[in-house]
Length: 236
Ligand code: DC
Image (cartoon, rainbow, N blue to C red; front, side, top):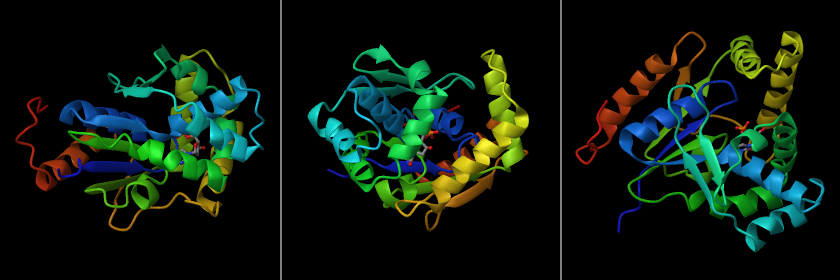
């Protein structure tokens, strides 16, 4: 049987990857993988099992030993993707800052990335997959039919994050936020293993001045040209 097609969307945080992937997966009726959430879930499991993140091999072992059942449900509008872990919605838990920074530390370890590889690839199921992350097009799904790389200037990304936090009633210093985004970019782009970079042949889109619908419109146009959508009924 032909393998299910994959669309990868990579880029730094705050560029609108999650929203774009939700829109595409809803439109096409394809499965969704939020790979950042898997790193965050692993950080959560490590915490629940009392394993320090520095113990990379033990943390990686958790994936093999208790491979949890994870599902992603694409969101309406700008809401984040719903993350179901063993039947429970863990979205709010894993999106906490502590979990994000533990995930980012875990992500630098080869044993952890290796352990997550097969888990990530197991999401490639019919009728197709939309994969959101940092190395989806370069490492995890190098044969993807379409690769997209989103960028946006750091101030714009900080503004979006600031707005999201404010809506949740969380007030932070804007300058600190700009600095923390720059720091996370440095870590993600300069790490030796699977650094954040556009895959060969990726379509690069700068979302600094484009709205959600505009970016989706551009990508939908490319998808229409590249894929046979005769099986897709819910054309927007
Ligand atoms: O996208 P996110 O903020 O939920 O990701 C959390 C961390 O996981 C991020 O700082 C880097 C890491 N990550 C990664 O190394 N590779 C991916 N494909 C996705 C996320």
